[in-house]
Image (cartoon, rainbow, N blue to C red; front, side, top):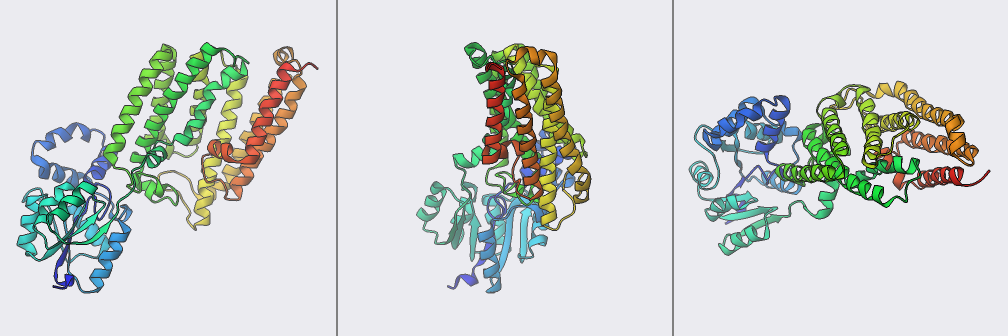
Length: 478
């Protein structure tokens, strides 16, 4: 029989979309109303169908923003053009299924969880037989779909594991098509954890360097533990932040490719990994010192406030980023018992305010190049560039002014053997910060500016020159 005569029945979660719409709508509900988290255990008492109904009644998903399995979607559209009947059969709540069906305009019928119960496994097969008949091919992804495949005339495997695929084939069910799923390799997880962003935590070593105590092995050992603790804590917050921002990230030209926004990684796995990373970070911080443990807790509180609320407010977000960078330096001072000077902290605030503004301006430049006018989830518009440019450059020059005042201070003149060499370091700072702003204006700043600086040859040369000049000023005689 021609496959076109077999109705094509398609699953939603994990198949048509690689994400889980129940988890997404639950997460969205918690974001809108955190108190709902307390009610969820009681909703579960009414069963899975009742739980889905309770969440769907309060919050759904935006079908246009969902990631879809594009090769499967292309195949379905081709089969639809051939005249094949296509049905969406999902354990997701009916309101979510209807939203997806309305967006895709592809399905002849929708079967979903509702008042009749949770449409999964054997219950889904019964509903398909009742509404569609016995001549159908089923597209699914997981072991939960095995009862449906066993009653189907054929199978379409979408991102199915090797074990699930083997069971389907062993059951003598003809496989019409097979589509690979997303890779969940270590490389993808490293991207999700933003391991490259750990470079920022090298700021913990700044007080040790500023005090020229980098040969103190005990302090270096404490800083090594502190670095790992801060890095794991930061990765946990990055994961939670990405999950918090799923919809806005999916509307962003670059962020939509992030592992959670593109559904390369499951949301629940992300929450589990974030929890494990955070627990490990806190344990390591306690080993460093009680003061450092409190500094890490303060960082977590501030970065959470930033991720959940403050980043949506114009200028408040960049001021908070500047504070978080400076907090890393102060945390390094606490870990080593070294007092960070007011010069260092003032310099840090201005430098990182400039870098934070670079990040915002680079996003606005990308939007401008794409013909869009405003960011989603942040209170910025492309027109704001006329104010943000001078503000960011002014912050950079303010940092250089602080450095100049530090060089002229009596304590600096007494501490450094050749303090005049620090003026060359000041010129190096002007070049480096100016370079970053020019790269931003050209639309070449496609990453966090701190990470970009570690990859940019000109920035690396400038930073190494500044460090070398600082060492020479400290140790070389006049």
